[in-house]
Image (cartoon, rainbow, N blue to C red; front, side, top):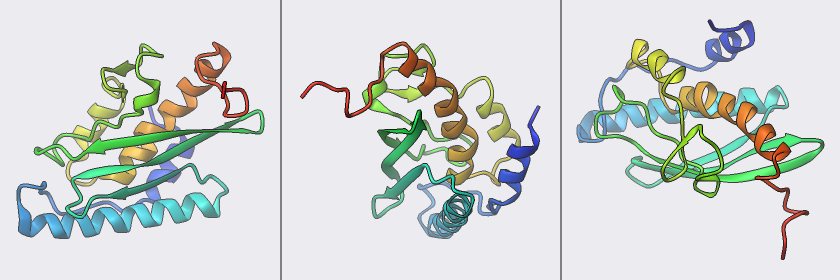
Length: 167
């Protein structure tokens, strides 16, 4: 079910240990440190492999995340704002990553621009609680979603490069 490239990517992202969400204020700080460490390793690995495709940051509490992701096609960079909240039942429940500007442009998206990860990612996440975190959601959720959906949206003319957009 998981290809070799995905296995390699996963094996290079540290697994998390602390099973708690934002409601557990004391342990949440430990979980958040693990999340940041995993994200730092994942971003560094991506850069080392010339596969840099997102930036993320969070609010002070680590409960609201936002940033940008991009997809390159035909030597053009298509950039999108991303956002998500950490669910109160995290890490049992995966975050729902949203790309608000694409809301309504594809059937593989829920209201508010939340990308559809139900069929493939959420069962994998459920089997790996609490080991998976935000870096895993990016690698196994958003990354594959972008790779499938963005080229299709570009070909249909629903997503345009910044050079092609009307002023």
